[in-house]
Image (tube, rainbow, N blue to C red; front, side, top):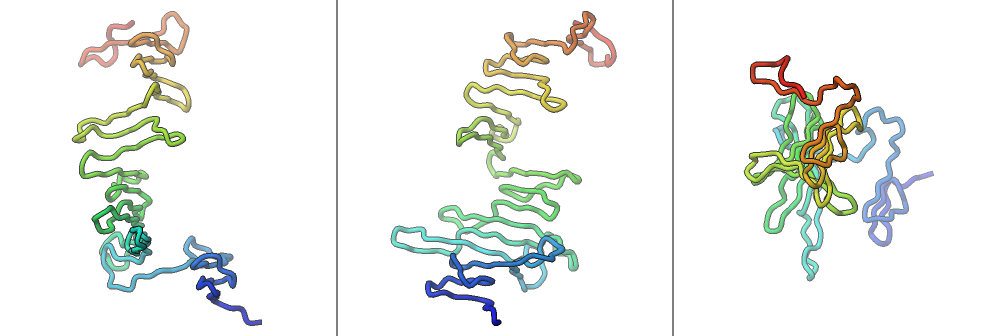
Length: 231
């Protein structure tokens, strides 16, 4: 029997691989037998001459006035050739958005090695997977939230002079080693505990062993690396 390849229903909805589309464009694909991640997918190709930055993409738009004015040029996703070398098929993935009064510009990039850059191109740190937060003003901010409420931040001080790890409200900070073992605690009163998770003084140090000869602290001179005053 004859099977339709494409259907346009009475509402103008288009179906490819289905004769009952439920959206403006609905595509059904059977990826059975695909050996690569990109086998049997919808393909968009850029046929302009080879050059760094070239690549196919999709753009998105919408209505932006109460009068119903629409613009199809609001955001985009596209491939971007990583270099200008002929025969080299390294490509990045670029995501862009549009601020009011501006043209659409790149806001995030995943490079061909899987490094991610937000606000700029990602850095390449000698084989390490890298997340780069970039800004032309104060740098990047990594924010942690729970149910829409900010709990903590990691960011650069204004001007980029210092890195700040900041907890919010009555929360403190903990530094763990070997999994969940807390090595250092800074509570919301700014008491510091080393080996102590509930410090009750400005600095409280607790050894991991009850042995009477256990060292609590050792103070060394600049040139001395093996001995010094022990407490």
